[in-house]
Amino acid sequence: MELRGPRAGAIESESPPAESRGAGLGRVGRVVATVPLMGLLALLAWGLGRTGSGPVGEGPAPDFTLTTFGGEEITLSELRGNVVIINFWASWCPPCREEAAYLEDTWRRYRDSGVVLIGVDYLDTEKEALEYIAEFDITYPNGPDLGSRISRAYRIQGVPETFFVDTEGQLRGVHIGPVAPPQLEEKIAELLGEAETRGES
View 1 (cartoon, rainbow, N blue to C red):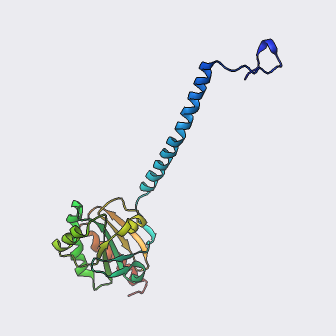
View 2: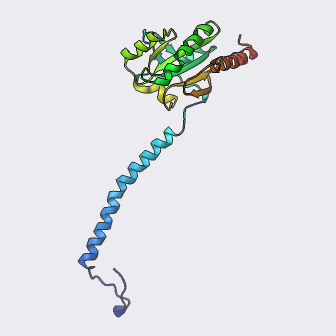
View 3: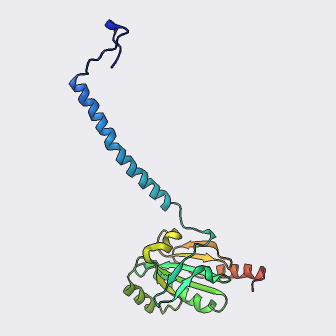
């Protein structure tokens, strides 16, 4: 509706031409169709924002309980007083193979020095994971991340990723990609040295 010159002050109630009505309905249809699309885009943006936030690298380490392939339960918060290294891996991950022997060797050298190494198997099958563990003669605790709960808590971007937890349960960094000498030795020395300075050993 609009004011027209010949009848100034009066409100016309003439219907717009059919063509105009059709155009108007078309515009309404486009708006209605756009609403769900905008919602979908918003959800995608939110998801990308979460992914882009990167892994957790500082603050209190998210607690978890991992049931190993051997049936043992390991709870992170019960390991206070130890330096804990958490490694996310998968049997189908080629870069994980590059670090497997180094991780096992580090475990064997530091297991009696207040260092605990935990392997978290990500989106894998038990059969292939156990074959991987046997191939590299891995003896440190390993278990599947059922429901991806642990990987979501640490916001991993992929595998391998390695997180470092100090003796007070605080995250002290994350390494994305395969670790290589002397990265683990240097981080262990740093965290054990800090604990000694605090009088924990």
